[in-house]
Length: 112
Image (cartoon, rainbow, N blue to C red; front, side, top):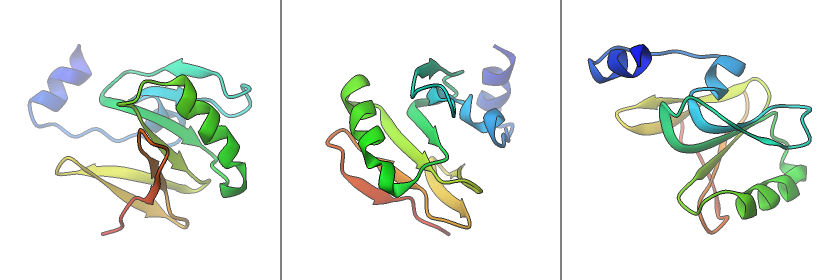
């Protein structure tokens, strides 16, 4: 309620680490056997996969099979993340962040 009203009124919202993951509709918590958890949904139709490692793309493939087609998977390496700016995602941090669409196609989240 209060967070949604703040955002709708033009207010900003910042989250880091677990505080950022929970803003999406769905999230995977590190060390939980890739169980999908419900987030706050302030960033609708997104699933956040933290601590992403490219050599573990099998995890993304499995997740893609378990979520609705309209859910975008955001794969975030350690010490990296994304921010929203004008309704688009911007990659931040030391490594690129990745976006997986409904077909499983992986694209880099652009940097500004």
